[in-house]
Amino acid sequence: MKPAPFDYTAPAELSDAVTALAERPETARVLAGGQSLVLEMHYRRERPALLVDINNVRELDTITADGDALRVGALARHRAFETPTVAPGALGRLLSRVSPLIAHPPVRARGTMAGSLAWANPVSEWCATAVALDAGIELTGPAGSRLVGAGEFFLGPFRTARQPDEILTSVRLPLLPGAETGTVGVGFCEQHRTHASFAQVAVVAVLTLRDGVIVEARLGLAGAADRPVRAHEAERHLVGREPEPDVFAQAAALAAAGADPLSEPHAGVEYRRHVIGVLVRRALVQAREDSESADFFSGAGRDGHDGWEAR
Amino acid sequence: MTGRIPVRLTVNETPYDVTVEPRRLLADVLREDCDLTGTKLGCEHGVCGSCTVLVDGEGVRSCLMFAVQCAGRDIRTVEGLTADGELHAFQEAISAEHGLQCGFCTAGFVMLVVGALQEDPTIAEDPERLDGLLASNLCRCTGYEGIRRAVLRVYGKDGTRQENGTAED
Ligand SMILES: Cc1cc2nc3c(=O)[nH]c(=O)nc-3n(C[C@H](O)[C@H](O)[C@H](O)COP(=O)(O)OP(=O)(O)OC[C@H]3O[C@@H](n4cnc5c(N)ncnc54)[C@H](O)[C@@H]3O)c2cc1C
Ligand code: FES
Ligand code: FES
Image (cartoon, rainbow over all chains, first blue to last red; front, side, top):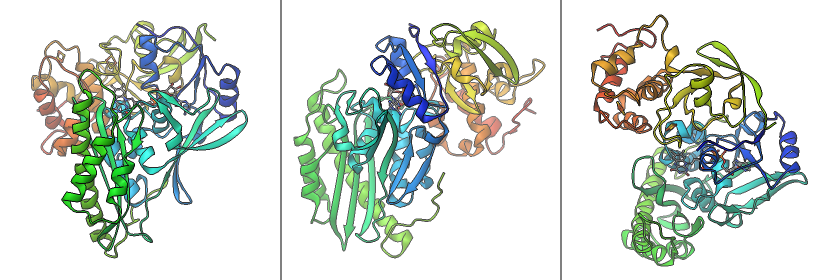
């Protein structure tokens, strides 16, 4: 099918976009990359009366370091994160591992990180990343801006804490400097049926190591529940222990046991649980290896910040 | 406006003044309003890539963009690759390497490859990245190997690497 008729506006100013959305919040939709919304409009599962196209709002097309966070504007496309220099140190390495597994190049040229969070597909890679990192999600409506933590933002499949009159204006990803607290290592693994398919399960792992011991662990899971979640029990098990295979295996078992995956035709609950265990272990091994090479290249037990370019 | 909106599209450096409903896909407007039928529509779900065109130099799915979004942008379709009915080096190569059979996917592959390799020719040197690129589009006839060889023929180490114009061999 073709999309049903709608009104269209594409303002250049954020304030005009906010005003346009606020006039008909229930029936209007924000158009970002369109790589989910236009598809839904083809199916006519989405029939917005008005599209507020934000692609002309230049101020949303930025990626900047803002204090201790990377501020990702709503128009930053998936492809911007393909190279590790998009952010300093471990954060850049993590984002550049995640991005190439989202769809394929032409979709990554249009789709946005912010749009992925707003859409809140439970198997979205960026949603799992945001939850793992405790990202801040900036929402701007007629009453001004507010910041919601990723842990409170996702409410269920395709459901978020965003009010209909709010635009998701930026995502704040904490930098992972590690210099004070230890060495940070990152890992990312996913299982998908074909190259450009959505993930059945995806796992983000971030380990901070000091003197050979894990001092902080973050595990973000997609496909493990009706929304992206952290594997808190597994994280607690890792902290204070050495990054050894049996410790990783125990953490993986805890993550799998604690998961409450949805069933779908090609990934039943038991299968998904099994995959979660396998991928958590692999992502943890990747994170340990990543921390070792970060250590090696910086020479001083901290992440290299070289090569980072603000955009 | 649910009604029709006048838009100036610049396709292959030629201006097209069209008046379209906002819901019209870029692919449909190219085909039906601009008479540029080289671009094909297959799945209309962003999956198959037969609708791939370049917008501001980047390969995108023209079935997942509205024409009204493209005012002021530089749109390139397969018709604009070369002048005077000559084939682009990659079109010659895809023919020489048996990279097409029915041809339905071909315009999409040509735009995908030409867009990406013009921006970054080193993709041809990295088999993993090249696979990642070619996996963007679906071909149900040739099985990709011929398409891959065609990329290497033009953009690989010993390729002619002629971005505009015909291959020398
Ligand atoms: C073939 C194909 C394969 C794909 N594979 C994957 C995959 O493997 N993993 C994955 O995660 N995704 C995948 N996607 C989806 C893609 O990543 C989308 O880009 C993403 O889900 C949504 O981002 P967008 O910018 O395109 O948003 P849009 O499609 O423009 O919008 C999606 C929804 O979010 C809302 N929205 C968007 N931006 C904002 C904002 N700033 N403020 C408020 N609301 C907003 C819209 O109103 C709409 O409801 C795939 C898509 C296709 C076509
Ligand atoms: S028709 Fe656009 S991707 Fe298939
Ligand atoms: S040549 Fe027939 S689909 Fe590719």
